[in-house]
Amino acid sequence: MKTGVIGLGAMGKHMAMNLHKQDHLYSVWNRSREKAADLAGECGVSCAESPAALAADCELIIICVSRDADVLEVVNAMADHVRPGTVVVDTSTVSSDTAKEAARKLEDHGAGFLDCPVSGGVEGARNATLAMMAGGDAAALDKVRPVLAAIAANIVHIGPTGSGQACKAVNQLMAAGINQAVTEALAFGQQMGLDMDKVVDVVSNGAAGNWFLSHRGKTMLRGTFEPGFKLSLHYKDLNICKAMGEKTGKNWPMVEMTLLHYRKLMEQGYGDEDISALFRLKTADPASSPG
Image 1 (cartoon, one colour):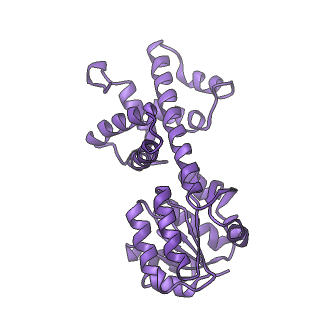
Image 2 (cartoon, rainbow, N blue to C red):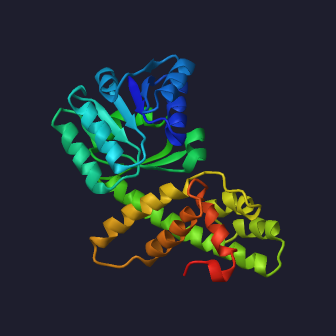
């Protein structure tokens, strides 16, 4: 199946490379053409002149961009050129409403659309171990699942269009809570004067163990916050969660608190660091920390 990738950032580049390793990759496009040209040359595939040109050549198109507006811009550019029967898979994290709008635009041209946000960070993209939450037509997913298996180890059909993004919102809210809990607990342990490497080792194997503690605990203790998952992107995602949550008429205090903390860190210039940079606030002078 001729597969094209649109968006070659930290996640998209690794997805494209893993597709290439399985002989699926046919064409790439990126807003910064040099990045696309370099990867195309390395893999021996086409470097498309535009999303429209890529759409005309591919049977499966994987989008990996940052924001709702970017997804719709790409979909609008492709819509008049996409082949009937093509499946477009959006791995970006956007709102359910954006997914539904993109699906409508492509369906008018005979193409299918799946909202398939992923979790697992840069490590998951590099190692092809991503978890993929799929919304849309189950038959369309089954059609492209063998190709998607080159980039994701766990692909689950959640429900109709928009369901994948709603599931990703659950994931991002949970990630915020885990980040809050782990960074605060480790800061507490430091204040108790404990050997924190030993604390991470033992707690990681107990009831409170989790991926974030195991993979970020020791790096944050050493003041290293290389992404990973950029704090500014999680901030964007949590604003999506906030907007979706407001429609329920309920308050979601974990979202509000984490947005407040992230905003402070971004104002201090830490937006491009990993989300574990929240540890900076937990260990800061209480007088300078947000509420």
